[in-house]
Length: 215
Image (spheres, rainbow, N blue to C red):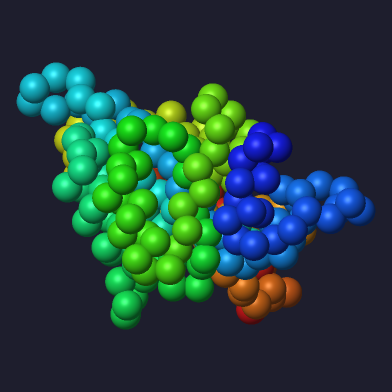
């Protein structure tokens, strides 16, 4: 994160710089760990009756737990789509951002003023990264690498339904069956480790595999 961006965030939140602070951005993350999420798009090529079509997938990831939700899949991430996503993410009953105060996002034009205003109205402050600085949104970038290398890049999609099916299968695999180095090689969703025979679970015809001892 650029020093000027860190300074602006700290100033806006009333956090005075301290001479002995080793890393302003690092201290900011530690102080609000568990309240920060990040969002980004990734694109997937899908065969349709009109030919090869690009779909855009918007997701949000919780930095502490690594939990992910798919916020939307569309061919046209326009202002109407983004406004609805913002309302869904900040819904007062069932919202992914209900425990978050900050949402890290890049400066893509899809993250419109209305999108950011809607977030602020629900108490979630959008934190925009500097231009061309993917490392500032490293958690989101890592998820994109995971879902593409482990699943999407191994498949050919015919129609939107096939893309949605693949993503809907990967997300529970990512949460329940896949170990994460950032979590001490544990899964996001805790499970009881048995001492019985090792069993294998397959998804998407074997594209996704996981192994676990039975209770």
